[in-house]
Image (tube, rainbow, N blue to C red; front, top):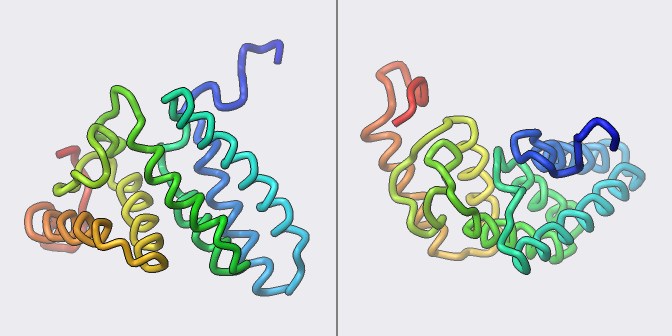
Length: 172
């Protein structure tokens, strides 16, 4: 475009984050109406996301790991359609996120997912990440994901939870 803005040009534009909510909304629409129209749009978007993952694996350049609501959305697509492709895409998303260069604790991508033992950074982003990881684990039973989830849960509830149940007011 003429204004210097490009698709997937800035990871902080949250484009893939919006995909995740669209996937979830399409699944709810299908459950409520029985219609496939919105689900068809979600499927085409998942095709696009699959292309992004394949490109990330090829180049090592990842633009899909901020506020990862799409992890949950892809698992919901799997649950609604019974198409194993969507679960594979969610698993691929977890693998691709480890290719992030110069990640940060803020986005929980400073080190590979399977090394996570402490909950760090942005509370909402970590919630999306670990909820998506939990969804993948619930479907594929990968115990290495359970190890991560158990460790960050323990760290959060034993070290970082306020007496009122709140968490995440400050970066730690």
